[in-house]
Image 1 (cartoon, helix red, strand yellow):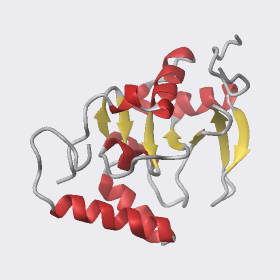
Image 2: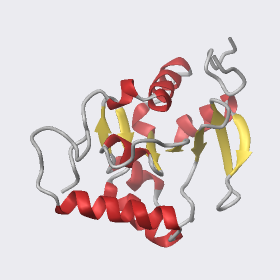
Image 3: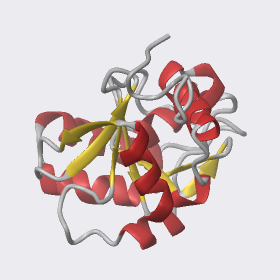
Image 4: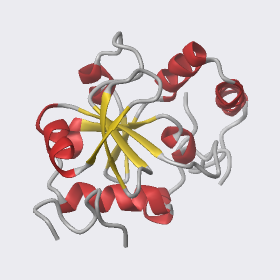
Length: 171
């Protein structure tokens, strides 16, 4: 069973707070997106810092971020992306390889403070495929957290139509 996420992590982290604000400002459906990459490790206290947020979106939510965000291309797979917050929040319509079912990934995600985060099992699965040094370290952290006794209620460590936080504006 994954470690329980600490409370107030979304409001307490600048990128998660920006994502939450962005979702509201440009009218995204929270049920149609999921934070993937290292974001789930952050909310479970398995990472203290992340440099960006990777978000997978579907349907109208994906179309909306493509309309409002800065166009980009995924570095691992060349897929179209839309970025916000000077490239620190990256949306895609899929995940790294085409064999990920976006609907399943989003539908089975866990909701934490109003945002959906990929399950740690999915994070481990993709990190095993990429097998970079940072991925191996993240897998070890997840496995150690799963093996550790749980503490009560806490993780292992504790202006356009797109709105003011669109891709082209940085506060």
